[in-house]
Amino acid sequence: MEAHWEPKILAFLCNWCSYAGADLAGTSRIQYPPNIRVIRVPCSGRINPLFILKALQSGIDGVLVSGCHPGDCHYLSGNYIGRRKSATLKRFLEFLGIEEGRVQFSWVSAAEGGKFSQVVQEVTEDIKRLGPIKRFVKNRVQGV
Amino acid sequence: MIQQKIREKAKELLSKKEVDLIIGFGEGTLPLRATPIFIRTPEEADRLIWNSFCESNLAIYLHKFSQFKVGLIVKGCDARSVIALSLEKRFRTNPVFRIGVPCQRMVDRRKVKKAVRGEILEAYEEGDQIIVKGDGFQISLNRDDFLYHSCQVCTHRNPTHADLLVGDPFEESPLLEIPPEVREFEEMSSEERWRFFEKETSRCIRCYACREACPMCYCRECFVDSSRPKWLEKSLSPSDLQFYHIVRAYHQTGRCSGCGACERACPMEIRLTYLTRKLNQDVKELFGFETGIDPDAPPPLSTYETEDRQEFIK
Image: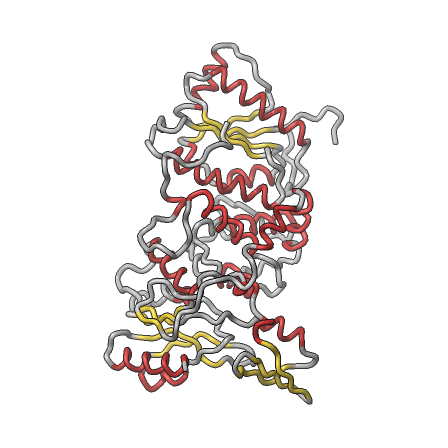
């Protein structure tokens, strides 16, 4: 392990709320750890569990999925559908033996720049505590 | 006798042209095996059998024959798979005529083979005994000691929503407390569970027999075969094997009837049903859904309640 290991965290942010929330955090000059790499998705319901698994397999240390608060989905029910997928996937991964906290979920609205920063801080701390991913990983991505 | 009743009913349905064909079980070419057969004329109906080796889930053939009016012999698990498939609109044009047979629980041929020294040349049932004959030996085994694990924990032996029931329904209760292994795994540490999963999947040769045997695995292009995007490589690297097994199981969420066809098909004897059983248990706990019980309830991952649990979301 490298002496100064920093976790790589992949964040799937929904276009309508969480991505705008991250944008707000940025424009408001709110600080948050630079460990996350953001992928903008149309909706948290768009998240295919394969995305999360592929990320972990590629050596990403943690994944955050964030979408609109319940009732606020731009597509009305996308986040509700996503919530069911997340609930079953999270339990299943933990049952298999992937550490709790590797994959996390949050609701962040477009007005919650502060909450976004806080969520990223919490997730980064959790992943730092867990250390680099060792189970399931195949090739560690370089330079990302 | 159940076998006789099945034959009579098959003859009746075929001669009245209520169905075009009957999918049921026939004598296998090897001892301890039954094979799926497709009966099109009343005369052929005498080839149908019923015993403790009729283990396959016949629901898998429905799509292939969906242009015909099919009469299907269903056990409890097959019947639930039929409902799960019909919820996913796998056969819309012709409803299936389900000939339900309450299941006496099926016998695990591998357990029998392990209990016997030498090759088995003949095997048949007599009451609750299995008589096994080979070169120079003949022994009788207690049927209940050689059941499939998925059958031991089964709580739905009576076919749900069958059009006709052959034989008397059984009282529904598992032989073993359910699900003992899921609880056993939950007591393990995360590390131990991962080691176990790693050890099991490391034997995988990626023959995909588990996928082919499963009535719910019907995607025209499976994610493992997809080249764009290429989700996983065609290697036997441990991580790719794990990837395949995680997703194969996860794709069964809210769809698995727990028939155990995947585990039975596996030539490497990899434990697979503990994964789907865990998912079934979660779906029941989270969404109050059980596969194949209610023919009108939508599949749990294609619907939602605004009040679904979300304590895990920040």
